[in-house]
Length: 222
Length: 222
Image (cartoon, rainbow over all chains, first blue to last red; front, side, top):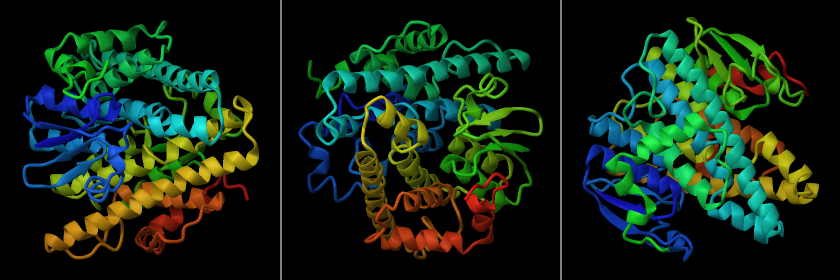
């Protein structure tokens, strides 16, 4: 498999985690977003959303959208599973992933920050405040939801979660960890999010997450 | 089942479509977003993201995030299926859904428009331009992706799609249709999107989509 990727892209990072957790080898094909390589012919005419990541399968299909790619990997390479076996637990994990991927990250990616700066003439301080607002509000919601789910697990007689859901990495962890990296880069206050940050720390203690992080990427820039 | 819902919420509309396509009865519990009922105790302390929709299952679990809810409904009430049977096709449908739910809709929901207006002091004209920019760019990407997928289907010897993917409603249609409704309300130019609008029209010719639309909701306001 080949992964079109940018070291700093959170969505790319999600897929790298999934590949590493599953121990699947892949070629890393860098697409430099700041140099707009994702908009160049050869990429843009094959990838409808002109975004990274895109995963080229061994039979030549080019898959887009990080969560869809991870579900594909999970369906085609089942173990270790990134989604639990029963429908309720799967809904819980997917909803956590979507709290990051639909509520936090879309407001803070590069093209949105550029629009704020260039089209809306927003000053840097206000742009940074926008960034921090959505990440902080989103993570506070995530923390509340983890608390509700911990209560639900306890009521069902399940062991307490160390990661987002249970003790093994899931799609939710694939989404949370890059968001924390991203938030830290913009100095988002992470105080008062003990359950979320404990899940993050437990993930980062795992070699798969270490191998997937931006500083381990071949196109990493300081 | 009980669906916490707001007639104008695109994410709520997605779940209503799924319920109607599957012919599943549900109680409609209105949550008035403009009156901030989603932030009131009794709702906010049970729903971590304090958003609509939330689906209460018959055994009392409160599910959040529209795409996660729809996948849950699809796993627990299999026919008619909203996701295809094979992994590649599922990845295609999920990616289309996420192109709407992760790339377009998050930039244009009520709380974001409020932030632009109140925190960033953006004038109404610039706020409307922001809205139209992201919807239009996102739908242009969606149109390109549908074109790529149509080519892929043809190469694989599959029948041409009438809806987003194939001839039966999928998760992708559940996401696309509310986005078009929403875009029309803000007068987004839909010219030059023939494949996307044909899928929309084919969906809206189906009774399930008619029954799910905002004007059919008990809390509808003109």
